[in-house]
Length: 95
Length: 485
Image (cartoon, rainbow over all chains, first blue to last red; front, side, top):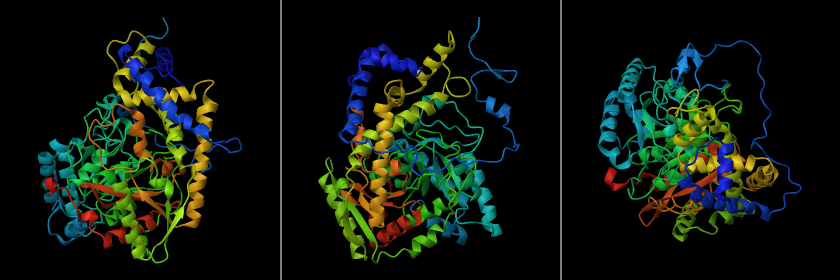
């Protein structure tokens, strides 16, 4: 797989990542090399192998649905870029 | 005082040879003097450290002290610390002060440890050389023109230079074991799920595991003890009972212990000097009664390729939380929401993190999922099954932690794939979720070489025991970089 400049910008858009045009050629080269490495996986036949998402194959633990101490909203919002009246402020979404 | 091991510090504090405050002051002074060379700390918190030391001294006087009471430590800057900046080595979190403590931080504080500060690391733990940090590279105390390894390079360098007797780290693909090897210290990555991930900033959630750096296996056992154990706030926390690691370590007998040597651990790209140092080290274990056997892990070569699908995939998902809304960097004057997301992330993340987000997004995108992500999960099973089968035949697997000694700064930054291959012997262990330890095994051209030992699930005690017997028989772990004696 060889990444082109357009591919880099298309994936960057999916990832909501602004990439300066000057860096695109380097990224295209690096990502192509990484995919060449990754494609070494194709040297083995895994047709009959089940995927393994988690090393210990543990079951999802359940807990009782009972109330707990809630988070301290003020402390959590103290690190936010912009807050007003307990709400996170972002640029206008709906005109 | 700085030259003492963690166990020696613990005993000296109990005997009242010096106070925790005296020791803390001495180490803080040492950090101020030496760390400008190494850059191993991102944040030093003298005030809180001294307050914790004084509290520990009161407990030592009361007789209510535990083994870690008053012992100075440092945390990798990936662990959230309440009221203290947690940057994860990133510009994205340069202004982030966590509203809560990670479980690891909480448990070590409850055990009485004194935290001197937060150590430098590759940005979001993505790197093998500590060169991707927003705060600049860490330098290896054995040769400051060389890297300390990564991603927990700051913790490793700080322990190697005796700025602190122990430190925490995290290991997703080798980020504890490889820097421990390159800095000539002991580093333990426990079984996946053994130590809580709560409050540890996520990189790849099915691989991330917290662990420890120290100068001896005994010290590592002492540090691991309070960190290990079930945490209901971490949904993948292991519920298995935590044994007494020091007791298991002391009880370990090498007589008849089966040690497997996978030929794949000594494969292509291996520095022959490193390889011979590790063979010598393994002979020491044989001399102590262990039985050496060859084992085979034919799919090990798939570990780096499959890891570079799985880890970026998980990272691209985990790092989507950094959007400029609730915490972390926000760009100036965003014109709309999308512009805010894109520019905040573009400015906040460095090149390696961006590369991994791009790869991860790509392999998860429509039409590519089966070819990459699903294929990698299948390879993961092959690798896990082979390691598990080998650990039926032998008790411990051994080999070089890293294929080479510390490389020069800048040597691999131009080629990410060459950098990735530094972790060829460590990544399989993460894919399988097994515990692994790196112990100082000797030197190649004046630079430390690490011996990696891998054990079965939840056999940290045995690994520490084998490492301890090796350290009883050798002096490599006592060697210290001359400049920082």
